[in-house]
Image (cartoon, rainbow, N blue to C red; front, side):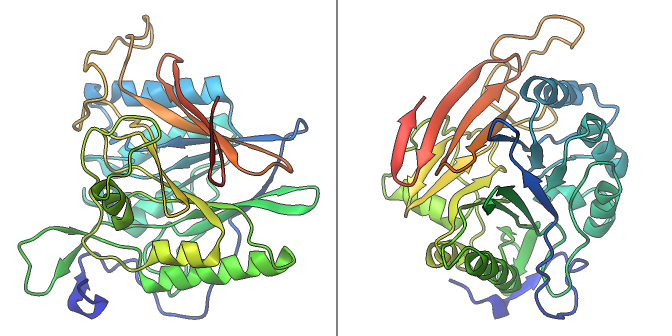
Length: 352
């Protein structure tokens, strides 16, 4: 792999001076009285305010929030896809604010490509009601690096890490070749510090965790090249990770806490795949027709009429149970159809 020293970041506004790891928790949440907790993931809404091609995305978000009634929402990026960018971000995220449900974002590569800096977009998002993201951390690359915990009667039972996978980098000597950005070493150091703290507080046992970010890791491409097949879901295009591997997957393996890596980015994929003891999980494309998507028909019937059958947009749902290992996940399509209902527990896979 090309060394990090040979890379100049294309976006530098989110790099800050180091001052030691920030171990602040964005939000500590609790299970419901029935012992369950539901997390809803949106991804790749690619919203453009005033553009009728975005109508399906807004309806998808509103419908899912009302139907699922989650306890936490995480949007894994590419929130917007055009000017006015701040208005676009505000409009597609407004239903999250209106819901009263805690929500957070892990920004995508397109979220700072339409005029405003990444920090300006993130600042707007943080100012919206219900958002739990903390300010960008000193010494940690990117903006949307955060950690959310889920606690039961005996303490923290789940940890949700959010990483900013940024946009792109320019490689020296290869300036004409596109390369997506990668999770930097100071982001990994921040994660390790938190992971070690949670382990110490849990009597030396790693706390089961999920990692959410936009651009998938190189190891997913490696798994597919080795012939590993998805457990379920659509595999409509090759993964598009960075060409650079900073070793985040190896760190997850070494720390022993991250059970699943949850991403977006590749719109024609919504599958679950197991590789190296970790689940790679794509969210379901939640956008409209401002960007490519081939998981369903392009036709759309507005919200004041019947929902088009098999419409492409949707979301991914996770359910956790207090005192119970593993988790359940499924894809919910706009209109209510449920697909890929799985129970995942270490290396045990149960179709529900």
